[in-house]
Image (cartoon, rainbow, N blue to C red):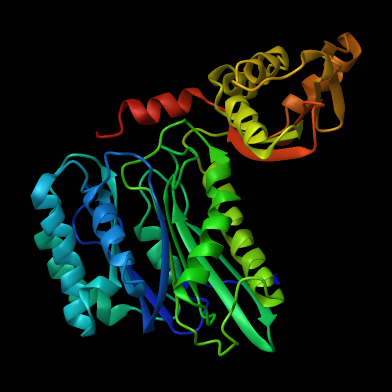
Length: 401
């Protein structure tokens, strides 16, 4: 497996483009279109937020058919909490693209991101789509990745390629996300493409596994959006044997998809609002995976831990306090904490001033790992978290302005 350029248009048969249609206040790209030459299996995972945006509701309905041809995404307006009018707008967007491509509306997926509660300026989107469709091309992945950004500082793309069953198979992806990032799927918008031959159910299985090991393992601020979506379209143009669960090729494909998703997830972390540090929380020695994940998430989402990371304050006691309130039965006398190569806690006790002096240097790094060993079993889990800075408060205090 190797990384290649191209993003969502790296796989065979996918084209994309982005344009400015007048949704954003500043003249920045705000409408993206991704098109496959041929319809194929579609898979998706969506927000668990009960206040779901219109495009999420529509995409869930369309996904029941399991076929994908194109995705139209706007930024600058979430089309969330907009009632029946918002649902009609999302459906009209799908119908507009379907008419242009002469395909079924249920094969068109819609994404929206931006401010909640404002009517979507559908007329502007309608005027822009025909010209946007005429401009989609094999090099348009970067432009599309720019067009889905909101508070993101940079576009996020990935593409990986490998040989499966004697054929070259490629997976591409793009994502947006800087705030409202937290587990429980999806935690942002992410769109993946592949030219692999694969069934709908197999693709859904692979995507769910990849999401659980990537987007569901990052947290920036503990909020999940109304619009969180991960979609993956496949078109089979690689010509490989159809992937089946349990086969070596499926395992390889799943690894590729997890790599692509994890790469995008970490790009989201590094581009988080006001982020200066990204830290991996690795919990070991739990009795079962669920407990390990619960401890990892509690430490990763602790505001006291996150502010200590920002300040470079080597306050390891905050980590101990967080894992103690995780709702998991632990034995403090078995707990150890290691920060990169610095063991700070052994059998529940801090190792003193000498270890803490070494720990201070670790906390100055932009990236490091905190290993929590509970000493109770063999289960483990990991999450990536970020610091919480003054800049995060500034950005979100004036988001709508």
